[in-house]
Length: 62
Image (cartoon, rainbow, N blue to C red; front, side, top):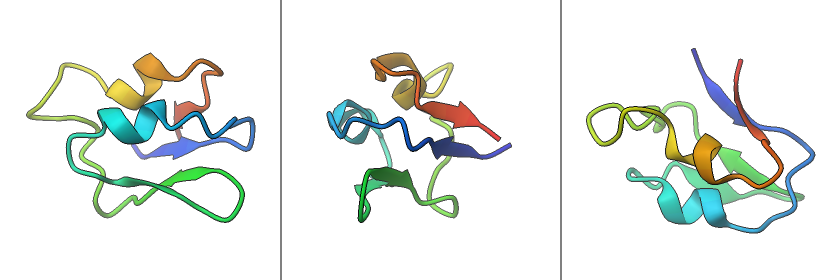
């Protein structure tokens, strides 16, 4: 599966700070996840941290 950030993102940057591999970056309008860099926190945490810290539940699996 692949994680993505929806357009409901409010640019709070919580997800970016939690990403252990720096796969999250500010795009033109909202934060985005580099799918080739994202490891869904495997090897770091039991579940993706971006999804846990997002106040708007914008980090979702496709």
